[in-house]
Image (tube, rainbow, N blue to C red; front, top):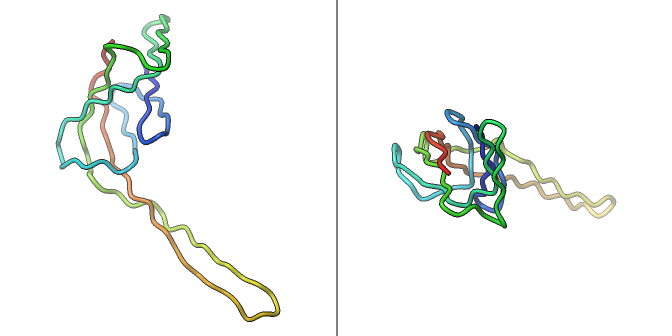
Length: 104
């Protein structure tokens, strides 16, 4: 059984027991979160597709780590012959969730 959910304008394929990194949520450690934007659920060959979301479908998750940082992305701007260069960086923050239950 798996589901496709939407969180932070991104789509994720989740199964029971899987760990996913979603956009930063305001939640504490060990908090229970219900994600109700379920696009599709596949259960033993039966496929339920929403338009755009399934009604009465939810994915229950618990917060493993409320704030995880991704690898640093280096942005380097350079223009030749004008002595211009600029180096900046960015680290995206995520919340790590453990999928506990998928309900239809």
